[in-house]
Image (cartoon, rainbow, N blue to C red; front, side, top):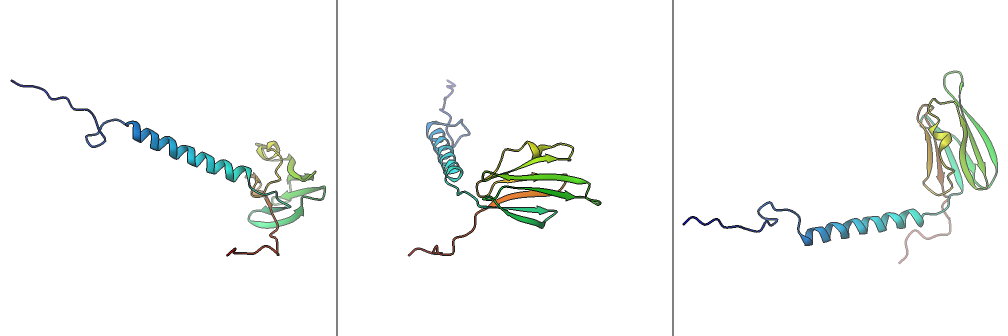
Length: 139
């Protein structure tokens, strides 16, 4: 009498995911998604744009002033990116790089957003000025 004993797969014997495992994974993904959305929607508005070329600061511009800046790079300044700051937003109007991804990027205005032109090594980043009166630690 050779009877085969069937066992239900469990986590201990290499079975598939069960209800509690699925619930844990879904809850974890939901928590991460909510945190990500909170960081995205509650970040502050920036008030200045810092332009760096090849890691060196090229210039700092206020988002409150409408301005058009030509960023010339390369050996004989033959590479060009045109930064436009208008209505509190910054964007690259034109670029002579081969792919033109930076010129197709949406306008930026929130703290931490950036536009990058890899061929020309140009990085445009929005920053917020720190308030001097705000306390560092609340007790």
